[in-house]
Image 1 (cartoon, one colour):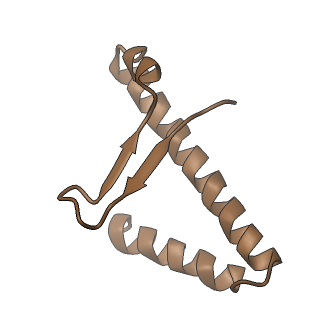
Image 2 (tube, one colour; image 1 turned 180 degrees about the vertical axis):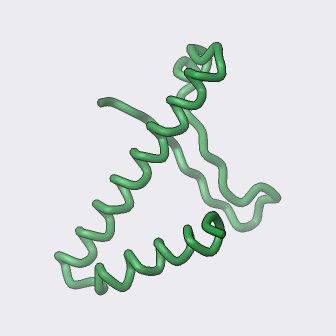
Length: 82
């Protein structure tokens, strides 16, 4: 699978986090089902990337990977699980 997502964080901007894709990819999405599939693939990509970052930090002994993973899980639970 190939996927590109750009995540831009700027705390001084009204919209703090921008998530975008290359223009030609977004233009190919023409129906709701394709949009749903793209978003699910983007979520999967972000999760895999986050896991990679946590593993690199843990393996390099920059921080505790388990603690970092729990912070991420707590954020998701607090915001999406009722």
